Amino acid sequence: MFLPSRLGAALAFATALAVLAAQGAHALEFEVQKVTDRIYVLVSDLGPRSPENYGINATLGLLVTDEGAVLIDSGAAYKAGPVIAAHVARVTDQPIRWVINTGAQDHRWLGNGWFAEHGAEIIALERTVESQKSYAASHLKRLARGIGPERLAGTVPYYADRALPGDEATLTLGGTKVTLLWPGPGHFRDDAVVIVPSEDTIFTGDLVFVERLPGVQGDGTSSIVRDWLASFERIAAMNPAHIVPGHGHACDLARARADTGDYLAWLIDNIAPAVEDFEDLTEVVDRLEASPFEYLANYDQLHRHNVNVTYLQLEAE
Ligand SMILES: [Zn+2]
Image 1 (spheres, rainbow, N blue to C red):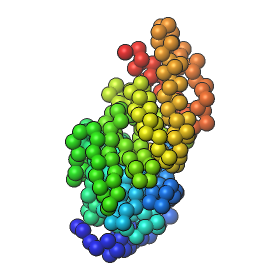
Image 2: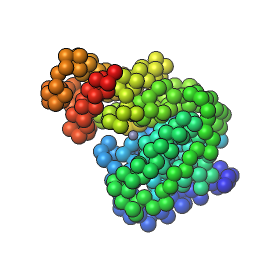
Image 3: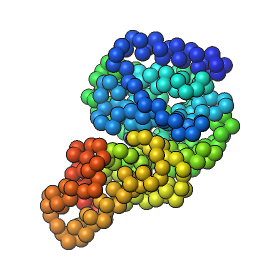
Image 4: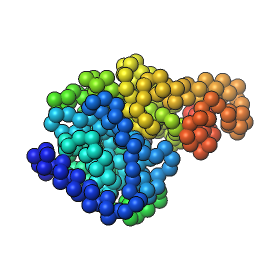
């Protein structure tokens, strides 16, 4: 469904307002952060998924062109669509004509369906779509526990209308060049970043976390710490002025390095010698409990697990 842009935006906004009114006081409130004249960020909670945040304990991005808005990641739930659209309507009257999915985690893409129904084309790298397919069932199950059946209603996997082959693809959306690039594995194995050269900005999705601790997953196929650090360095080498992370506020490269790159490097630097010395895993986890990263949210929930998983990864090398 493609509507003339102003009418489309007005309709989407009206729908959004009606849904918000029906939801009463528990509607999700994003912090809208302006990065450049064309780039905005919708920042949600750093903590766990909840009914209040529709599973969007994450950051979404927005690129405004003269011919429509590009939403970077669609949230985790169909019903969050109008909430997201209402926030977008606060900063632009351009309709959301494109949605780019950076990743395979629930809050990066499971909200696609609402935007597709409201006129947006969904775009992702093919490899990211394959990854979404492999996680969809398990993520939906976990999401149901986190946000409850009422919030999850209507959420079904909707995969990209335009799935781009290869590791890199450049498109022109509304006159603005954007590049989807797979920099290597991150929090998930096949997530991409979105580079907008005219705004000197990279949307990193879950490859960069700020203000909260990155999570190293223990499933053996994603979050390989050495690879993630290499991917981070590939992003850093492009030296963007602005980074829109997957979690936390938009920031500069120094902040992204402090909260993600330095942590991944710290894990490797501290755990690799312990593995080399056959130090007992539980001793290592206890010994490394304190670190310079205790200021990050979710440290108490994730750090010991991260040390544990990293030890096992390095031991397997
Ligand atoms: Zn995430």
